[in-house]
Length: 225
Image (cartoon, rainbow, N blue to C red; front, side, top):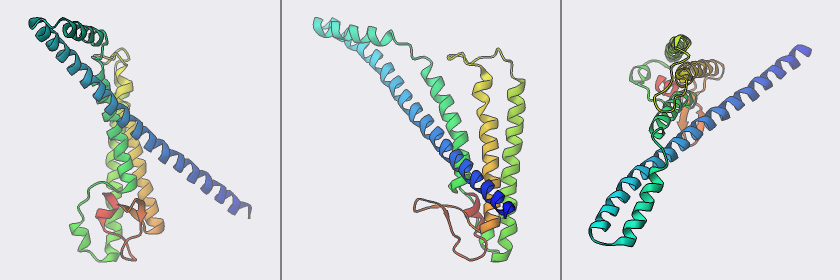
């Protein structure tokens, strides 16, 4: 009885931690893509606003429209006083981090593109080892990338910084091992769930997981896309 309760407690704890990781993953992606989009929009408005106001001031001065010239000059000076040269660099880093974590989310929810022409021709009983092999290959590949990324980050010069933001480069490149290891974990998580339940990630009708159409293993395309 104690052993059963202990296992139930560990299972509940694992489910809770996995739910926290799922929500954290989604919040990181949503925050990064939202912030990068807003920052890019502001930078574009700032750049075109400064250039267009300068052009408008020249046109108004040439045509003797003094109030318009003064207003355009004020807008130009106000915008020129704001330095947003770092915005494009920061937005790029945000999108890179978002892509790395988004790839892990894609492995969890089954939204990656997969080629399942060959597997669909197999008998239902023969599909299971192929699906497991494909998931193991994904886990191995992302695990290797994560390890190589971790070694690269470790060997970076601590004094090396980015051009505009002047942030330490190791912080920026940290997304490689973090995102790759998370994706590796998701591949293994999908494989374990598939072996236990026969369910594979399949994006459809707002569901993260949908039962295969057949009672046996689902096509490979549903397992890895």
